[in-house]
Image 1 (tube, rainbow, N blue to C red):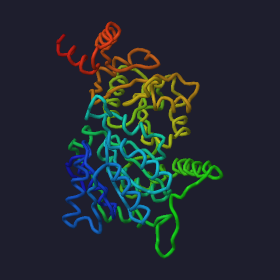
Image 2: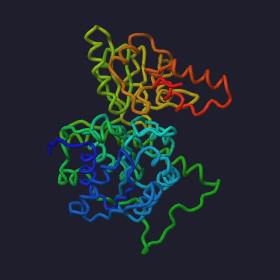
Image 3: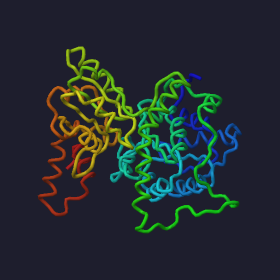
Image 4: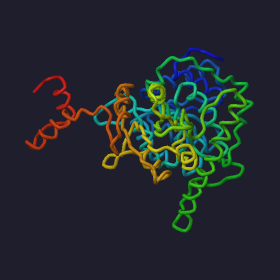
Length: 407
């Protein structure tokens, strides 16, 4: 059903169509509207049977998800930013136990300093936690990815994060074709757990494993991620057959067939990048876009196939590894070791990624590492201040005063 709807509400409706039996919720902006919408559906008996658990923290939310999933329930939660970091220990437990939990991450910057706006530093920080990570370009894709996430998680017994840009998507109103529950029922089979705590057949889940088998246990998680590289595109094709639209997959191209330069990006910034590419194509530039939907597991073969003919690849990232540089870029370099690859870090803490800025960076040969729209004068002043005096004060507050024209 086509509706003009807020992104968070669309995700809540899509999750409800998947019929979770337990929803564990601790609100944190910008995911709050998702769990609020689900609470209203549960209280109105529009999502039943479902137990809605208000917990005291994000760590408790993931811990409750682990318990409910181990007991055989289809479960869901959502978080963002510091909330995702707070549940880090439990994230590794969920993946190590092979529990098919689905979680929305409404991407938001990590402090300090405090920042509630969008970038990808939260989910990128958990790239080695053993969770599959899928990134949505639009609210339509965000809704669709949750349906596919349950199918993938339960088939492979792996947890899945569906990442959508906080505020940019979660609070934006768009036309979304919401999947009807009857059609989701036909697409998503009833949950049959691969492992379950059953009093009638007692087992231990999460027991101590020593050196004699720990490598093999960890490798099994890796092997299942490799299986996901086959199952993700297959589930996306099945979804297209069932619902009549393309969503998800590993990586997809836009105007890449004859492109000398390809910009690779994740999330909602892809819309702006595509507009810039269309404008540059009008100027005779052979340039295209690669939209990366699956970041973990990283689709090395698919990236090679899509980008192998490009002369130059520009990876646009909404997070970076301090002291190193690009995060996604490192994986792209592994996939294409002979390619000329540049990293452009953009949109940190919600800074707009404008068409004008992208035109500037794509007009020249980008440096190996570029920070889009970086105010070097502002940074230089703070570096000089800290070199001049030992007690130079907090850097963030100093730079804010500089921007305001203070002393």
